[in-house]
Length: 88
Image (cartoon, rainbow, N blue to C red; front, side, top):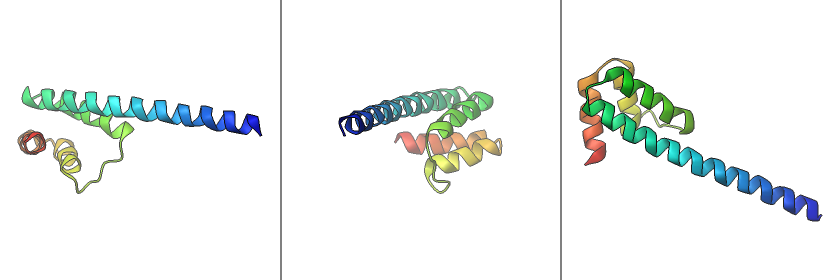
Protein backbone atom coordinates (compact mmCIF):
# COMPACT_ATOMS: atom_id res chain seq x y z
CA UNK A 1 0.00 0.00 0.00
CA UNK A 2 2.86 2.37 0.73
CA UNK A 3 3.99 2.04 -2.87
CA UNK A 4 0.59 3.08 -4.18
CA UNK A 5 0.58 6.23 -2.09
CA UNK A 6 4.12 7.09 -3.15
CA UNK A 7 3.22 6.39 -6.75
CA UNK A 8 0.11 8.54 -6.49
CA UNK A 9 2.15 11.32 -4.90
CA UNK A 10 4.70 11.15 -7.69
CA UNK A 11 1.91 11.22 -10.26
CA UNK A 12 0.31 14.22 -8.57
CA UNK A 13 3.63 16.03 -8.42
CA UNK A 14 4.21 15.33 -12.10
CA UNK A 15 0.75 16.60 -13.02
CA UNK A 16 1.23 19.66 -10.84
CA UNK A 17 4.59 20.46 -12.47
CA UNK A 18 2.99 19.99 -15.88
CA UNK A 19 0.16 22.37 -14.97
CA UNK A 20 2.63 25.00 -13.80
CA UNK A 21 4.66 24.59 -16.99
CA UNK A 22 1.50 24.89 -19.12
CA UNK A 23 0.49 28.03 -17.23
CA UNK A 24 3.91 29.58 -17.75
CA UNK A 25 3.87 28.63 -21.44
CA UNK A 26 0.41 30.18 -21.82
CA UNK A 27 1.46 33.39 -20.04
CA UNK A 28 4.59 33.71 -22.18
CA UNK A 29 2.52 32.94 -25.28
CA UNK A 30 0.09 35.74 -24.43
CA UNK A 31 2.97 38.18 -23.94
CA UNK A 32 4.41 37.12 -27.29
CA UNK A 33 0.99 37.35 -28.93
CA UNK A 34 0.34 40.88 -27.67
CA UNK A 35 3.82 42.11 -28.58
CA UNK A 36 3.70 40.64 -32.09
CA UNK A 37 0.26 42.14 -32.66
CA UNK A 38 1.52 45.51 -31.43
CA UNK A 39 4.35 45.20 -33.97
CA UNK A 40 1.80 44.25 -36.69
CA UNK A 41 3.62 40.91 -37.17
CA UNK A 42 0.91 38.56 -38.45
CA UNK A 43 3.08 35.45 -38.78
CA UNK A 44 4.61 36.03 -35.35
CA UNK A 45 1.15 36.44 -33.82
CA UNK A 46 -0.06 33.26 -35.53
CA UNK A 47 2.94 31.36 -34.14
CA UNK A 48 2.37 32.75 -30.63
CA UNK A 49 -1.31 31.80 -30.78
CA UNK A 50 -0.37 28.30 -31.92
CA UNK A 51 1.90 27.92 -28.87
CA UNK A 52 -0.95 28.98 -26.58
CA UNK A 53 -3.33 26.53 -28.26
CA UNK A 54 -0.88 23.65 -27.65
CA UNK A 55 -1.17 24.02 -23.86
CA UNK A 56 -4.70 25.41 -23.47
CA UNK A 57 -8.17 24.43 -24.47
CA UNK A 58 -9.49 27.60 -26.07
CA UNK A 59 -13.23 28.19 -26.31
CA UNK A 60 -13.85 29.32 -29.90
CA UNK A 61 -16.54 31.71 -28.63
CA UNK A 62 -14.19 33.42 -26.17
CA UNK A 63 -12.31 36.60 -27.04
CA UNK A 64 -9.10 34.58 -27.34
CA UNK A 65 -10.85 32.08 -29.60
CA UNK A 66 -12.17 34.89 -31.79
CA UNK A 67 -8.67 36.38 -31.90
CA UNK A 68 -7.35 33.03 -33.12
CA UNK A 69 -10.01 32.93 -35.82
CA UNK A 70 -9.06 36.45 -36.94
CA UNK A 71 -5.40 35.39 -37.12
CA UNK A 72 -6.29 32.27 -39.10
CA UNK A 73 -8.16 34.46 -41.57
CA UNK A 74 -5.24 36.89 -41.80
CA UNK A 75 -7.30 39.69 -40.23
CA UNK A 76 -4.54 41.54 -38.39
CA UNK A 77 -6.70 44.60 -37.68
CA UNK A 78 -9.46 42.48 -36.14
CA UNK A 79 -6.95 40.51 -34.08
CA UNK A 80 -5.39 43.75 -32.81
CA UNK A 81 -8.81 45.07 -31.73
CA UNK A 82 -9.58 41.83 -29.88
CA UNK A 83 -6.17 41.88 -28.18
CA UNK A 84 -6.78 45.46 -27.06
CA UNK A 85 -10.12 44.45 -25.54
CA UNK A 86 -8.43 41.55 -23.71
CA UNK A 87 -5.84 43.87 -22.20
CA UNK A 88 -8.38 46.50 -21.07
